[in-house]
Image (cartoon, rainbow, N blue to C red; front, side):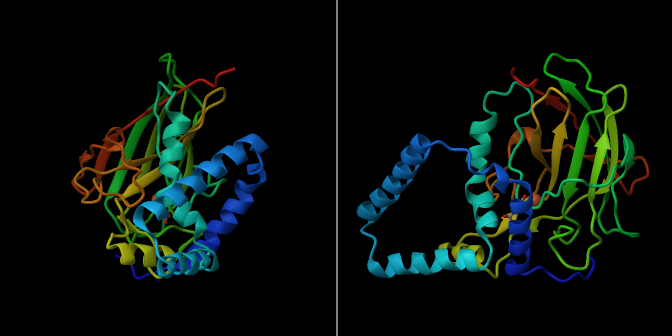
Length: 284
Ligand code: DHB
Ligand code: FE
């Protein structure tokens, strides 16, 4: 462990909100009146049914109202949505795929990470803590053809479970890099194993977790976006065997096919792992 300051819910929430607005909110007006009418009525109807079924009291209604206000004040809507809702959107969005289906993006992706070649080391601090990991893989299309020049964007938490640009005192692009496959579709990435990640507990999401008696942990994970011309973008996470939270991830984002099988490396200190990706061609 290094000694870095833990991010507060308000600070990481504000960062995640700003990131979302910069990247995605421009495309957010894309639903017809009919869809909004249908979906809003069904969601509200489900809430009304829950209130009737469980005879929700005014005290409980006011507690929820206060909590929803606090989610906004803490800037935790991105966190709340990505932890408790996104996994179902992702399932629906990728159910047609014949290649890798992937999993949630989460709130901490930043586009434009440094170019790290087809075989290279992700940006990291001198003496970055954590077990070194050498990850090799290949990117192919569903028809088996090799995808040369595919991009593998990798971002992950450090050995303290913290993300650069969302926790203080970490260099800007630490543990964020963009790799490109070679003529055989291969890449080789040198990084370190991330630690399990705890969602911020001092804000509204932490309050919900404590009030419900849940835990705040996600298993250790590597985030990737894999892209190639003419193919659907794959957003995924990779996990490590025997992590105690693989079976009860707070974000429900673990799938068995996303668990890596790292082996001890030749030098005894590092681990090696082989894992590749199969992309679906874009439908025309
Ligand atoms: C959250 C953080 C993550 O790193 C992730 O992968 C998913 C969700 C969160 O804090 O909401
Ligand atoms: Fe994450």
